[in-house]
Length: 337
Image 1: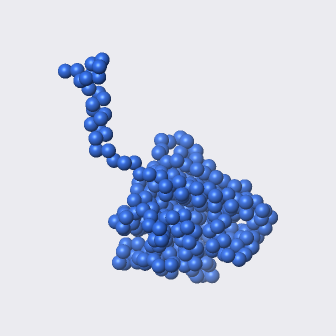
Image 2: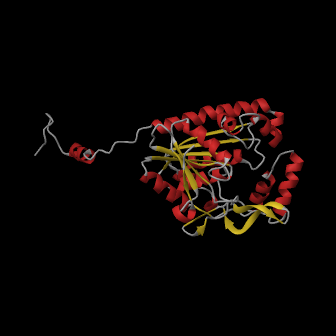
Image 3: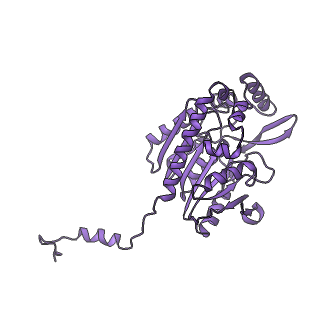
């Protein structure tokens, strides 16, 4: 697929732009994959482009597989480029850590009119890095948040386990639960040690347009079901303009991808891969499959409805009409002098 590549040094963000064949004025910023041009990102692009939208894939940086003080200005610069090149509507989609990134960006930038967050948290947490360090594949970054804006780290929940205990806990829990990776204890223990403060919560009430949240009770990485319910409660208690659609499945694992997207990523053996990755998928394969099919249906509808929704037409005489209605009139409708 033809695309335009962007680098932080020259363009202000790391990503790739993929235009659909049928010209569209809508783009979804998709943060799925470790690199904007890797196999996972390209698979997401194929699924999204079939729905008639352009796609801008983004990730932290080349060979940067962590999330630590990610500058939200990169999303801002990407949106500026999109608007300059004919994209009137901008959506954002992410899963796991980037699901949290999607929510955070949408709560700050009002030009985002569609937000899709798969297995997100409703708060910002300490930044982390991935690679190899002292036999660990992941470790928390001291003094760093997941995201930064205007040169400052966003307030975050610190992990109660630091390097190397952070990775030791993940390994022990993964072995105990039979999952490829299990970090739920890490998050539960950290929140117990440091209850989330108001400044660390994502201000979801500031999100505009459509907000689609999806997760599963049996998520092994963190309690996304609890986080989604907290967002619903927050929206019920605070004034907001977004239209929220939240769905939590009993079984679905951390991979709550649309079934068609997962099949695009793994044309053969997609269900087997999920079973190997998460123990819940082994116990409840039918339920997990049903959840992914339902997510596919719901997400397709959400994106297509957003794509087809007409922008309000600006009426330069609207305020004149409002003033005229206030002018006193006689019984026959003529202006009273």
